[in-house]
Length: 357
Ligand code: AGP
Picture 1 (tube, rainbow, N blue to C red):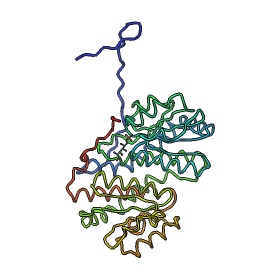
Picture 2 (picture 1 turned 120 degrees about the horizontal axis):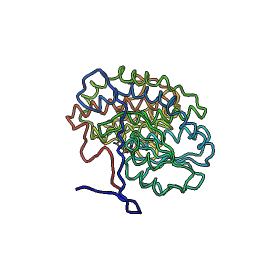
Picture 3 (picture 1 turned 45 degrees about the horizontal axis):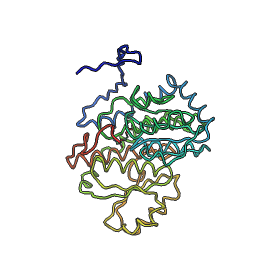
Picture 4 (picture 1 turned 180 degrees about the vertical axis):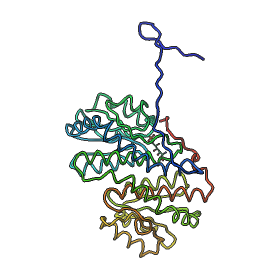
């Protein structure tokens, strides 16, 4: 079937073709699955992104900074992993003194928007229907729409007034790994431009170390965890958002029921479930004094406890730890799913881009 398009005057419009190239990333190693290839690629894709933010995308960033200073409220709208990276973004902006929130795209109407609200649409594919519907409804009703996407000229890119690209290259596995990492780095970079003390240049190395220093250990650990049914993942403040992302990876790829919660919420209910049969992963960097008490609470009940960074080597400085802990979660998920012989790259019931409401 051939479809022709006409303008109001009845003249045929000949669509122009646009070929979009995503940066090609090569890692000199053979991989059994796309996800592990993409986990490895993060060392390179993070570098490509940082270079692009410093050079080719610097004028877009200048405009975004000016929009931030001239708005009264900043709202990030996203789904799934993109929502989790957005939670990190709004956390950083709040730390810098801006009024900022993140909201799940399918619930975007729970927030108030006005002509001074700056909206970020965060999506690796740029084609997530929930986020597109929010964008269409808010277009011209807010201060400005800024998209943060991996796929240039995607629907969200085209709807937005301004667009940043995260330059992660092609991501084939349904689960987001390198796109999540590059979203977080983009937000770290934005926070740096707004005055936070963040050295983004050291991140590619930190990512590479997180993989190198932990992969063998995680491979072995995964053999013992292949029958794991449930796990609680606790974190506080920025690390709670990383707990959400690790939990999503474990559910989506390794089919493990993983529940992320604020450490401080344990005593308000969930502690009733904790006993010597429970598994808990705690995000416990040195800068988080509060999580230590929560770790004692689960230890006292005999739970099997894993801690990052105690049991896995990563740089535990703020805010980098929030990213590196997720790399550990990605590897853990991959090797458990491999032990279970699961369809790792294409998990059941899921699609790479969710184009339905
Ligand atoms: C993440 O591993 C998932 N594949 C999923 O949560 C995804 O992040 C979500 O569907 C949003 O997709 P988007 O970033 O393309 O908008």
